[in-house]
Structure formats: structure tokens, C-alpha cells
Image 1 (tube, helix red, strand yellow):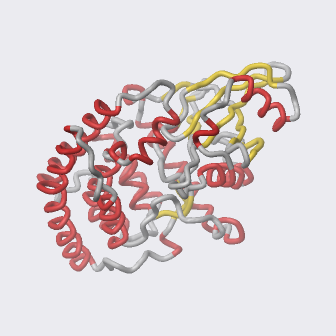
Image 2 (cartoon, rainbow, N blue to C red):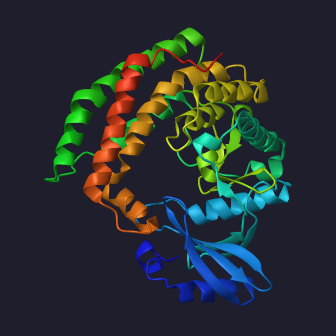
Length: 358
């Protein structure tokens, strides 16, 4: 499998040649398009006005995630189950870290464009994934979703692990000094308070802090799910994209990540509608609401750590690989630190209140 550096040397001609070999038909046009924060994506034209998408996945020795396999295999599985509101997987070349998918005609969904009907569609999609649990012969072989945590303790350990990445980072830039002060003076003390609170809430609610949820309580999930990873087709339907983190997950995490993602910009009423829709779709999971309430601030702290990924060299390399233009490291890191500080401050004031349950 090619490394990120080797992939970065691809020219448009290289992309056309590789795609032609994979498709068995001449690709006469390739154009760089948006893509995600991890990969490079090209639209393709071939044959008689046919279109496709070539996706080159970030690979690095320090990053153990096999994004190509996770996405192509999960989309293949879901396509076989008749789920058509996803990209069609067509061909794959692991050596080149590349896969080809069907082209989706559509436009991005902005916060201003999002409707309550879109919330219904999102819940319906997640409900259909949950209903695949009965396909034991296939679905049980799916891996855990990226960063899946099946106990409250595991969520806390995930946050602490992300925090530990910043140990030993020595840089002279002002933003690194500000990062160190924030982590030492604000984040770490509050995380200790939050861990104690979560233990107390688990005890009061009859939820185990350290025992994993059962297989019956888990669900299949794209992990990074939301309208930021979707397109609205001309006929109004929504096609969901980016399944490189797909696998088994805790539905409480699915709910909370949907609420949190900064690219979504959902209104408070829409967030409440989503929570209520998920509680109805997962009605047999009697402890779901309590788990969501307890893990909500813990995942808030995880999102603080995600905002700070750009301070970690390997994570910044991934973002730089996917970017169409050179990144201003200092400005980007300063912006991300501000987001983390603001989110941490918010939860210091509100961590005991989950306002989306009614």
C-alpha cells in the first residue's frame, strides 16, 4: 500500500491511467474535488458520459487505520443489503490506496438548508443499520467502528489517551505555550471532576461504569455520521458518504457525535427531534437515554481533543495530505485551540444538564 508521500506525487494523468486499469475502460478526464479531511478525491469521466469517483486514502506508518478496507468493505456489505442511499463501490486497488465509487449527483447540505425532514431521513438510515443486526453471518464479522467505546470507562480512557499525545511536545511557537496552559490549568482539572460525576451518575442510574454493553445493544454505524458527510440529490433524497470509520458502535456515541459535530450547525429544536427520533428507533434499548445523558459531556471533552489534532505532527500530516492548498499551521492551530477552550468552558457550566431529552 502506498504511503501518503507516494500518493502526493500523483498527477491527473496518473489518476486517469490508474482508474482506466481498474475500470477496464478508458478514463478521459479526472478533476480534483472536495473530499474529506483525510483523503484526496477526483471526479472521473469515462465511456459514454459515465462518471465515477476515485478516492486516494491517506496512509502513514504511524496511523494504523485501514481506511480503504473499512470503507470499501462496509459499502459493499450495505450495497448488498439493498441500501442505495450510499455510494456504490466499484473497484479497489490496495497497492495504490485507491478505490472507485459511483458518482453522486448532488449538492452539499448546509445548516441553512437542513430541514426536519432531513432529521427524519438521518434517523431512518441509522434505524436501518440497526436492523441489520439480525444478519449474524455477515454483520457480526464487521469490526468495531473507529474509536468505538462500549463502556463509560472506555470513553474516559479514550479521552485520557488523546490527552497523553500532547506529553513531550516541545515547540517554541506561542500556540504551543497556550496549549500547555489550557491543558494543565483547565482541561485536566475539569476532566477529573467529570470522571467523578460520571461514576456517581452511573451508580444512581444502575449503569455499569466499566462493563461493556451487550452485543444486542450495539449498532452498526458510520461513526462520522451527519449531513457534513452527505449530499442532497436532485430528487431530494440524501446520500450519505464517508464510511472509512464504519463498524459496531454504541448508539449513545452515534447520538452524541451527531449533536456535536461542528460542521452540522443544527438548531436546538432539530437536535431535540433527532434525539427523540433515535430513542424511538432504539426503543428496545431501555437505558439509551441515561447513557446519552452521562456520556454527553465526556464526548464533549473528546471533541476538545479532536479540535487539537493539528498540534500532533502525524494528525497534521493527514490534514495537509487532503488539503488542496498549503495550510497555515499557526493560524489553524490557534483557531482549533480557541474552539477547544470554548467547548471546555461551556461544559464546565452545563455538564449536568442534557437539554435534548424533551
